[in-house]
Structure formats: C-alpha cells, structure tokens
Length: 199
Image (cartoon, rainbow, N blue to C red; front, side, top):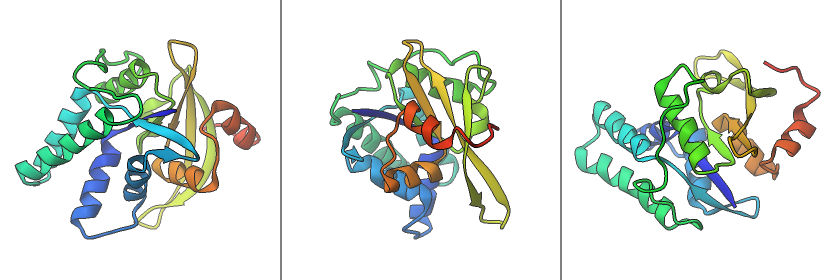
C-alpha cells in the first residue's frame, strides 16, 4: 500500500483549475490518480492532518470560494482518508508538531504528518522547502512554466524516524512516474536518476 500526503498547494491548484474550467492540469491529474484508489497496481491511502485540511479550507475561503463549497471539498478529503485501505481519520491518527528541521512551519507540519502516517510519498510544488541536510536530491526533469521559463525539477528522499524512506516529489514528476509505471521506492528512484547531478 502507498500512503500519500498531498501538500495543500497541490489541492488548491486543483480547485483553482476546476473553477477556471480546465480539465487536464497537472494538479487535476494528481488528484484524479489519488482518487482512483490504486497507483501502478498498489492501493493508495490518502493521509492529511486536521491542520492541513483546515489550512486547505481556509485558503479556499481566502480565494473567494463559497463557504459551503470549501467545506464540501474539505469533507471530501476526510472521506477519502476514512474509506481508503487503511481507514485513516485525521482527527485521531495524524497529529504531531511541525518538524523543526524545516524553516516553513506549514511544511514542517506536512512532514510531521507524513512521518506520523508512515507515508511513502509527499507531493508538493515546494520542493526546496523540504530539502535539508538529511535529504538526498535527484534531478528528474525539466518543466516549462506558464510564463515560458524553464524549471529544473528534482525529487528528494528523506529517512523517516522509523528508518524507512519518504519520497518528496513534484506533481509533474508524480504524474510522469505513474504514467510510466515507475515504482515509488527509493531504490527505483536511485536506479533511474543516480547518474544525474544532485541539486
């Protein structure tokens, strides 16, 4: 089973794309893949803390979403967790304090949630905020941004407190990996990207 923590920025980007009438943005593809319940033949369990869900709801309200729509969207995330293969409940399972090794408190909370849930993957557009001395970095691809600029993407492998690996990946790479069938494991990532320089 893959336990996946989507960062709030990915979920907000998906909501904004939906509201704008788009249908094939990277964030929409990520969420569709998470909702599908399996990735590359493995069952998927969504994991988020109550704090993350509250932040998501708050950002939607700040961006002018109707209160009922924001609440329904947050509730949908809770239902996805509760009815996933591990049956997570954000109110009971995923607490913790922000990881002090990260400068951004919200990202520290995301990382703490991933550790508490024994997550395999965090999907975020804020890769640099998850980098640290204990993280391995691998250049993965180059993305052309909406403004025409080019951005080099990379993924991170961090060690969870239980000694297992946590992969931190950009949404574009997450979609590419699921479409290509790449296994979400540290060994598979090292084998595929070790020849490329680290960020």
